[in-house]
Length: 466
Image (cartoon, rainbow, N blue to C red; front, top):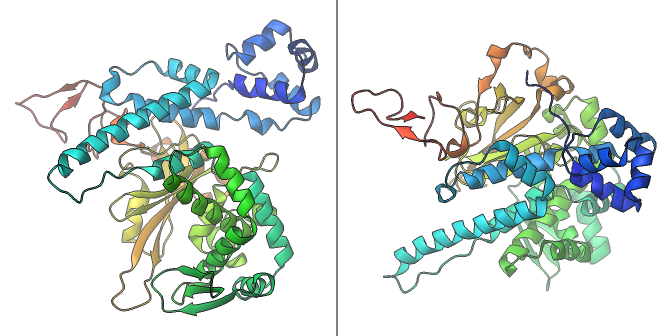
């Protein structure tokens, strides 16, 4: 098992002091430490002690989960991936990167933005080279990366939208969701809801006041699409205020994010926070049982579990992602130390890539990342029928996981030997930043390591990593 990490959270410690409007001297007195010791903790020269954490909770009524280092670790992973770009040369020591992420998070974000701009410029130059001979070619912007990063650094949790969705769900009451939601739109907005053999999942005609849903969609999907429309109609100002915080560079990014926020509302209303968290704990996070209890899909349940980050009522930190058959990650979020690659594909050793071979079954995997963290990983295929013989079926696989420290709260861990080190399969994030030297599935060499090529010898790889 990996050794426990020390808690460095100086930025959060300063934010709490500023919120409470305390001087450093008063703050130190309430925490029971000297002024110099507090200064050292706030500047990350010392870790936050258990005594200080206890004082924050008991003396100042602070939710100590705010001190969790998840956001710092997420930023460290992103910085390391960016620094693996050969334009930066040798990789700086991990300690330097951690110091930057924890002590100067705004500077770290500026660096990541600069690196993203560099990559976009490189991609646009490549597109320009290809387009020189084509009059109809257009250099496409990359707004989805802006949106992805916005969700990423908001921890995929938008508290105001989440609470608005929960309030709406409580007003709606129990019963079958789809007819109740259709009745809500009819009575509150005069909008008729109909199902038809349409190609799109949802189409709203504001002139006719008619919302048409794809007849082939399952009931949870139809309920989700109605809730999406309700979010746009009833919570326009809340969505716009959230978008203002993002300061997107393009209208395309803003429009994509608005769709994402409306989807967030829909998922949060379908699976309201407090009720869902209580039920998830009672059912020990059994995804199939939760899907049945809330008339939701397994994918909806898995994704919702990864968003339960409300201050004072956090759920288990999960990571969640979805891949297509080519291995492209189409959804991603992690509230754990495991962070997904911002560029390129994921690790082929994740069990999620095997889920396509075993439709309808959950796959379990005990996995260990290069940093020594261990996880319980679940994977299952997800098929989305097109509604007709000649309409293609969309096939995905979803992955959900948590650190082993939380595995006992999952029904899926009951018969696994969590203490057996040999049971854990080594996995990574992306070949380009993975430090494992002996991986038999490596597709690319790590960018920060020198390579040796021996023409007289050949192993699994045609080179040796220095």
